[in-house]
Length: 458
Image 1 (cartoon, rainbow, N blue to C red):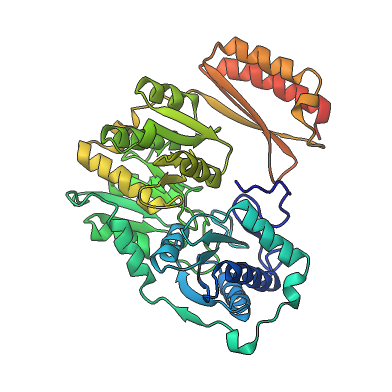
Image 2: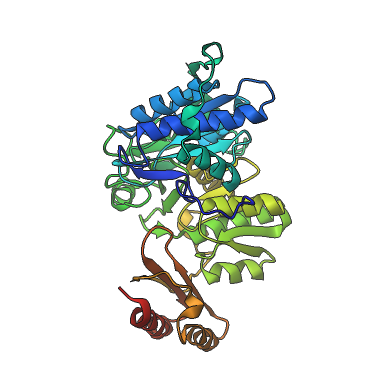
């Protein structure tokens, strides 16, 4: 995380996001953001003209934002390399591959098509640190950026990288072991009518798989609609009816992946993390014998890894915090149970296609189905309760709450977990409880939620 403690007003944990054509996701704001990014890069490029990669997903509003941010960047004296619709991790890869100074992704990930968002990568393909985002925010919100005008002789150019898709396909394929192939595997692949609709099916087909594609016909308005990583109905149905070996679902910008096995049953993200950690550990490639995950990962994962001599490090929710911890400690594998999985030896951010390739490689190498591999882990029952609140006051100021949590933890005898936090975007307290039995969860959940409702409930 950056050194600044000033709260950000535009940027959330994953860039700026909102309804297209409403503040802050307007073309005017995009132009200012482009100018601010170019201005900051020019200061650190010591006389060299900065190059900035700009890519997007398949939303209708992407055209508008792509043009606006390009105009802003060029007007401040930097050059733009356009790649069109490509997964977020592909844009991070192209940024480093082209030796660009920054990358811009225009996407709202798993959100509906009405939304859009903007996030930035640095020259090494990592998300911009908080400190840089605050600098951009200050330039934009203060209006200072509006008074900056580059001489006409220094205005930047915009060009298209025609082979961007091919570059990413080759990169992704190279993360799959050279001695293996996907021949004999039938894969149902749901691309969410999003950014991976072209490149991801190509990657799996070129490695030998038979690919049944769904969510591969974007029209600008159908991204994530009844498909993708949050809507698995179509994926499960196709795996069962087509006799496929595995179902793979990406989200709109393809940085997240979820799986179902050959029976069409969903495989929990913590089981996928366990499979990946075990495989890297056995190969001697799990650096410091550590997996980085978030507070949302199941306690059963922690216990399993511990038995195998693997440490689990937890961060707050958000893939950027997972990556920051991985970089800080020099770890090679991290992820969120929601589907962001980061293999730092290959890439700098969550990459659904790449993560799926690693899971498929494990299936091939071990000669096992995904259902068999997923038997590695039995999850503890877990429940997430959302409690609407009128005020987000510190939890330690709610009378009796700390004592109740402590006594509840004692009741679980080290075989369960309580996590209580406020939502970053809604007036909601999120209570996550994990225990060996549903009955224990019921008792503890009712007690804690009841106390919060009585004190600050809406």
